[in-house]
Amino acid sequence: MPVILEAILVSAGMLIIFFLAFLAIYLLAITLSPIERGLSNMIWDATSPKRPSTPLPAGSYRDFSRKH
Image (tube, rainbow, N blue to C red; front, side):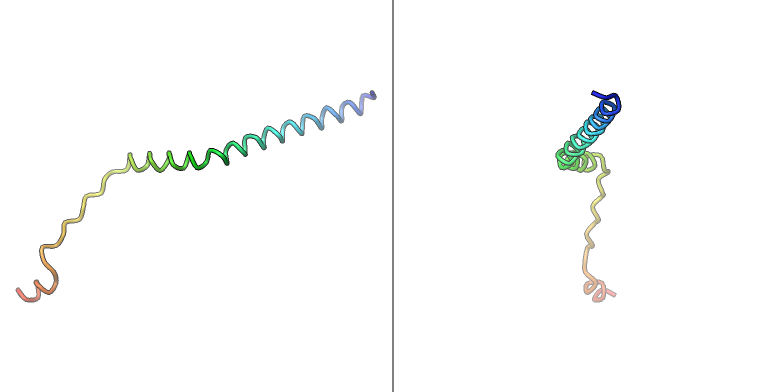
């Protein structure tokens, strides 16, 4: 086999392997993204400070108007 043909085949093989590895990592990331999103939401919910509940008003505006 000529050296040029062998170099072309080896280069093409390495490019194909590189793109197949990239495709495999991309497909793995797409597959695991829902799991990562769920874990991220769970962690953010667990670490976020709890908001203090707003106190309910004692009366309505109509009651205020009647009193004053």
